[in-house]
Amino acid sequence: MKHTISVLVENHAGVLARVAGLFARRGFNIDSLAVGVTDDEKISRITIIADGTDYTLEQIEKQLNKLIDVIKVRHFENHELLTRELVLIKIACQPSQRAEVIALAEIVKAKISDITANTMTLELSDSVDRIKNFEELLRPYGIKEVVRTGSIAMQKGGVSMKL
Image 1 (cartoon, one colour):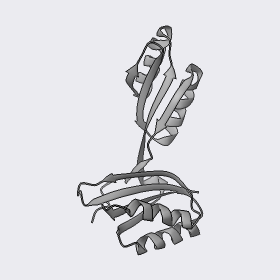
Image 2 (cartoon, one colour):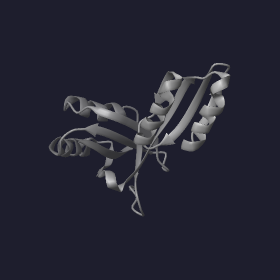
Image 3 (cartoon, helix red, strand yellow):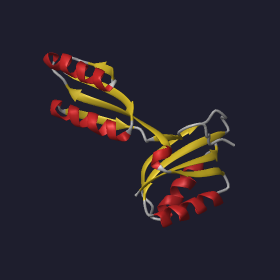
């Protein structure tokens, strides 16, 4: 089962390595990892998406809370999350195909980030499922390269994960 864990940490060198090391020692594979500074530059937010049992998740949360630089740990249920991921997809695209690809990009609200004589690079920020669908729609053109960020997540509604 996929779990989304949000961790507020002090923004110091080595904190990410300690968090990732904890997952490695426990044999808990990280599917996605995104880190960024919050509105307070002294605090970073780590969003981790990992696969594991509820028991494993509970153990990881307990171990994370023991780390000195960890301020707050929160596990989110999928129904309470807004998640986004950014993808850049470079495809082979002949001039005769451009109008078709541009129309497809408009439908999914993707942005054309680069265009050359024989390629187009498209950018989309959306849910993981919609990004997968977009990638499948572009596959017939010939995908040359795909670069994805890790997912970021925020709880829906008025609740905030702040200090």
